[in-house]
Image (cartoon, rainbow, N blue to C red; front, side, top):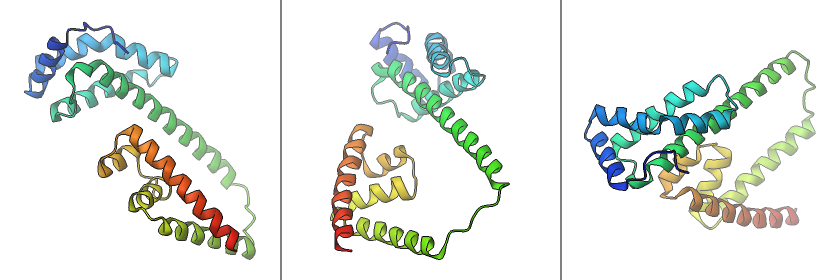
Length: 194
């Protein structure tokens, strides 16, 4: 998506280079050049939520930090880079809001007495957890074991796992899908043996 800035790739590369060199004027130019586009994306995706201004500021803060560190490897894709940051921040905002809503519901539910699980339910839950760990440990690929454990059990962020394992986002999705398929086959075999 083009944020409405000029598509002069040499000018964009020069702007990125100047930011990496610590030029504060270049940082101001970046904000000025892409301000309307970023604001438009955030307003559209949030529906004008009150957090839109915070997300707008955070987009540029993160973008400038990443550019200064040299994380933008293809300066000509600056527009897409900014769009991606804004989009990811909006997604994260809604995830946090949903979690917060869930916590409020949990607080309300906590005031009501809960029936304690029976000993049989506890035993079955422990057996199932043990079986899941056993099946994961039986996977032949260390990467499959790592990706399933870290993503589903340790609940690590996708970006962290990708950085550690040297994967792109798309490659991560493929690896995770294949690991889940291998896990499912082993799990079904294990269940069949019981």
